[in-house]
Image 1 (cartoon, rainbow, N blue to C red):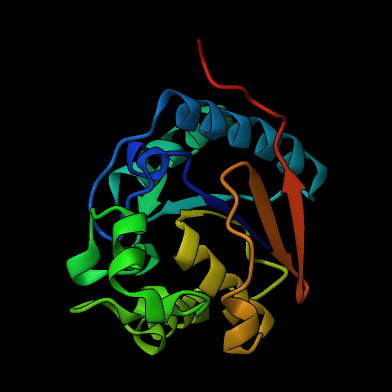
Image 2 (cartoon, helix red, strand yellow):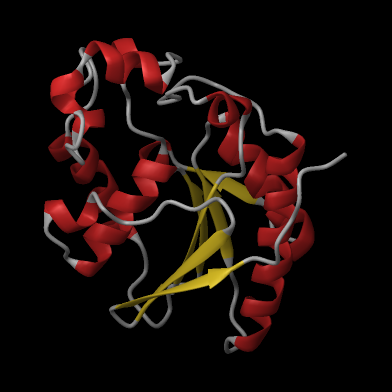
Length: 199
């Protein structure tokens, strides 16, 4: 079983910037989202048969901070794996999404547009590293993992787990206030308690 989380909102998210491998800290809302994920996971894990859980995250700062908030709630140490990092968007890193779309109107409407970045990562390369990570994990039902990753990385990880075609994988939701459970060949979504923008 894997509980898969996306990091909370970052300043780049709020500004509409493409993050890729660039660093951006959690906003106050993002930290609240991370704590809400920790609370939801606390409830979900207690419903499952007793077993040791591992918490693993992308080493990028936004995922690390989210994982640390979750780990604090669950009493778990955070481990890191480079294969869980976000897509590398090359020359588009840190740029406003609106600007990139304005300069590349031919990519509008293409679900795979993020993989077209000059100097960026391909779909095939990203999928290969995520499958490599997934293949190394314990088999079900012994698998007990809580994973904190990113929007595109989490989307591809779910697609790899479910054996979805590329087109369907690229249309999967990437919320920052929900958790996905990957177990017994099924994927279930659990929404966190709503949090509002801090005053």
